[in-house]
Length: 297
Image 1 (tube, rainbow, N blue to C red):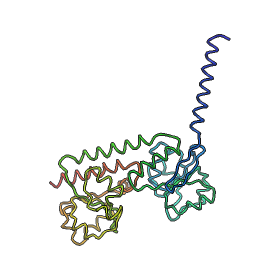
Image 2: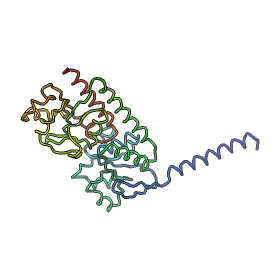
Image 3: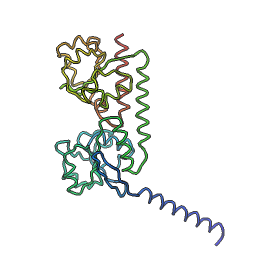
Image 4: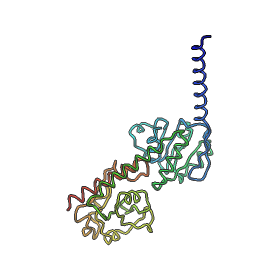
């Protein structure tokens, strides 16, 4: 055997060894702890995933693993590529039989989901996440990295932070101490300072009229908003008609000066989901507020 032939065999042998070693490392079992405090063992990265919460669906896709999804909840609608996947119901009517038929390697769902126990009884592996704040989302991305056998969470989180920083810069010139009220729905429930929406508002330099003491998403008395006198009101297009009829609201600076940001359904999905599009949410908010403040000066 010639020296060159021996060299080729040596190179091939080393390559095969390294490939086998890398596959062994990649396929090594992992044991992440979910947000119930339960350790869930994965012998290898799951190839068939079901997500039962829109923010989790978006997180899986942001990490580059959309192709592993085989089913989602009825409210998951982004990215567009998942729209043809089987829809498995909502919080109160999850289709457990269909989930079992899809043979998932894992079902990702929220901590409070009522179907966890039943799925586990049927031999379906579950991993629960409880995402209510920005730090929760960062942790969820990191845990999904472990489960999926990847290391994409730093990239996704860095993108969120960059977009929030851009949103902050958009508002930093000539827009100081802007008091805002973010209405989640017309009950009315508001986004408090401790919610992920409240955190976004703070990070882009806005003053939330809802104090921390009221919690993340408090139901409030509309008179509270009248007394707080926000400079800008943020709400969805389905709420605007109701706002105009509320007693005393015509005296609020945001209303009298037409500083009301009205978000479309698609924009609202981005704004009210604590997922990988939080940076985009910050940009949507900052752009509207900048336009409203500039036009009313």
